[in-house]
Amino acid sequence: MKILQAFLILGFAGIMLYGSLGLPHRGQAEAVRDANRSGMNKVDPGQYYIANAYKDTRTPNMVTVVLGDYRSLDTLGEQIVIYTAGLVTILILRRRRKK
Image 1 (tube, one colour):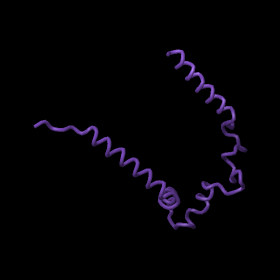
Image 2 (cartoon, rainbow, N blue to C red):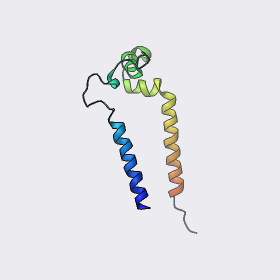
Image 3 (cartoon, helix red, strand yellow):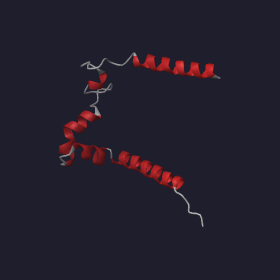
Image 4 (cartoon, rainbow, N blue to C red):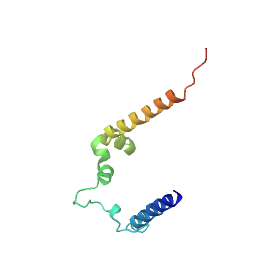
């Protein structure tokens, strides 16, 4: 059983190493992640948010614009998941008093 676990760990480490070979070097200016356009020649959403945050919403705080306006439904879904996990944790861990 330990041999199987060792092979699985080595296999996973090999896959991770193989995947990391295609990453750009740190600070490389022509890295794909630093390009303003995606592969289909469309503007990157992050660049759009930075360029148009104030024009679209008239809110001076860019974090508020991104979380509250551009990604509001995604943020709402994340909050529902977090609140549900907290409620389940409270229900599981609460102590019942003996009578």
